[in-house]
Length: 120
Image 1 (cartoon, rainbow, N blue to C red):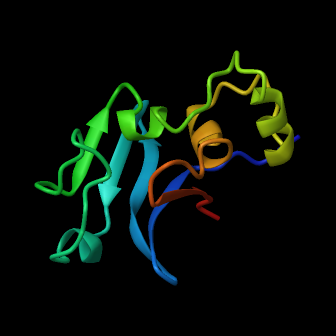
Image 2: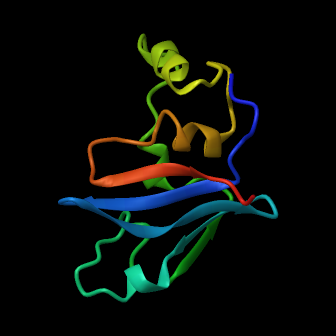
Image 3: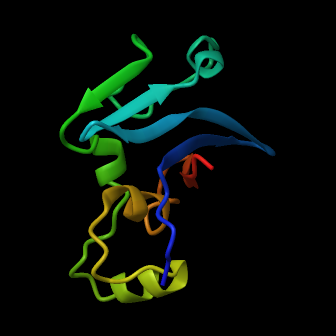
């Protein structure tokens, strides 16, 4: 199982043959923080990660994980959940939302892709 936990989640937008860096989800002093990349937020064709994270400001903080990230997590009680965890090398008992989002929630029904972020 995974030993080194990510410090955050890098968010990319898949478009054609390229990936645009959208922003970074991290934890700061017990809060979940999502910060849009300055270049991304200033592009005219950028789309928000979700309605609760509009492009009207660059940084958002919340005690709870933001809905666009929660929605990407498969239900823990689902029959396939153990298989998802095994494929990503994490325990079915993992409760760290950053770990879960960057692994079992990394791809979903949208063009956004989540990848683990390590400070060092």
